[in-house]
Length: 227
Image (cartoon, rainbow, N blue to C red):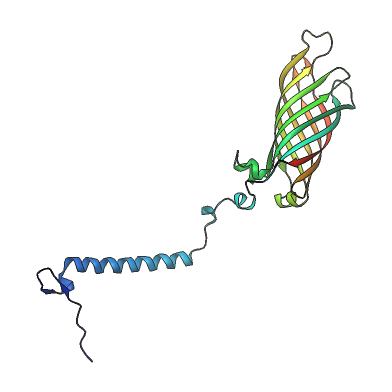
């Protein structure tokens, strides 16, 4: 069996130099060996360590595309004022951002299964008086979002409104502006992801300078996805 001789390196002077005596050759060999050892260790560690869920993207972003449609909603209502008449008509409209879309404004809304609504609400409280409000509402769905996309889900919500009321005859002013607070409870039905229907009960609290225009309403409406 023949003896194995190390590979000789030709220097600039034409002499043969043993690699162990060449600083450049020793450094090169050392770098190659370290690279191989580190690379093999990283591969082994990557294959053996399970995925850390804290390092993955939030589940909502993966399951609910950010192009989830925005719905334009219209509704009719029947209600009345706490201190005024009952059985009065109302109507309004809203722009509904389902949780997948609302997460663009606040990421946590998806994890809370919460939609955002921009609502315009007109409600008569007597034959001569009415209250008109522009509202920001957060609506939380009580079922999973998969159930909401596939069918129906009950919800509860709360919101803040900028309201204008028409005061009774004889008041020093004809109109009054102020803030109102509302609560809602109801149910939504999704129809082929491009439309929806809903019913809800709503209570709005409004008291300002001695006038109580707090009111309730029962509403039913339809919504269609914006293109």
